[in-house]
Amino acid sequence: MTRRYYGDVPAVLVEPGIKTGVHVLTDNPKEVGADRIVNTLAAKHLYGGPCIVVDFGTATTFDAVNERGDYLGGAIAPGSRSRWRRSAGAARSCPGSR
Image (cartoon, rainbow, N blue to C red; front, side):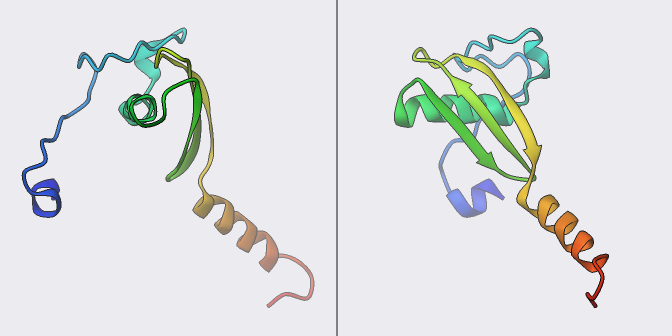
């Protein structure tokens, strides 16, 4: 799919053991997903640091990056679709709704 839409742009598979240059400064670096590492790397490259990366995907993630581009940690919240479904379900159970 990448080749179809992006042609000759090189792709890199980021998985445990791949050296990205991002230092993960958490208690258990192996628990940090590749998506969050790549987001950290992109934020540092595009905007510098320190910064906070917000990713609105299936889940909404918030990640802190220091001035050196190190991943400091983050938080995960339900994604917008999850919140919308939960709200819609709650609205249906309200009196007077159809």
